[in-house]
Length: 222
Image 1 (cartoon, rainbow, N blue to C red):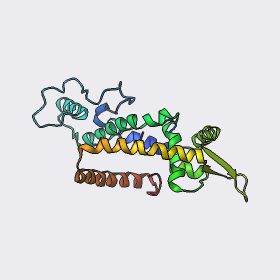
Image 2 (image 1 turned 180 degrees about the vertical axis):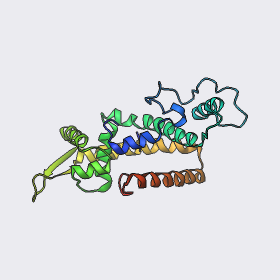
Image 3 (image 1 turned 135 degrees about the vertical axis):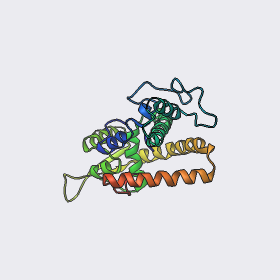
Image 4 (image 1 turned 90 degrees about the horizontal axis):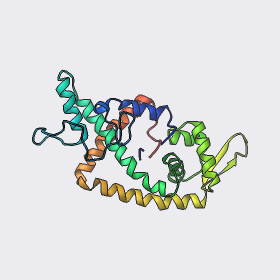
């Protein structure tokens, strides 16, 4: 999961897809407004129809429907909730990373090396983590200084380097991952197995469509 600095054009495209979603409700710390708590709602949320959704996005949608009844707020309801959920999940999921002094982009690099199970070039890491080459180079330097990754020159082309996890880096990734999975299990506890499956299928379908439009390979980033 996703919650970092210096994202490349792919991340920017994903963010822009939600610009205006829910009319400016972006999440816990979006650029469109101050942070709001998971339970807070915009002014005017009270007095909604019985049985209507009572989340923050629903309140914003009702406000837009009141001032612009001529527009279809359907897309806003979907994109706004995806953005809101992503921001809140990312904020909480980053807590284990902060405890060990890692940023989300740094952990993405470590995670890519761990899950692929072999060395990767900086270019491959950039594609795996949807990051720019310059950003990957900077992060790899910081991770190498902490003895979490090592780099070796290619035997045939010394302009190419290969990056791998050190024993310390592998141990760190393996120690963090259970905490994140435990948190995710708690978060999803409100949905039964069938509900989780339906949500996963729908999000997977949407993601495949978005990746197709951006020309991204489905093999990247898991």
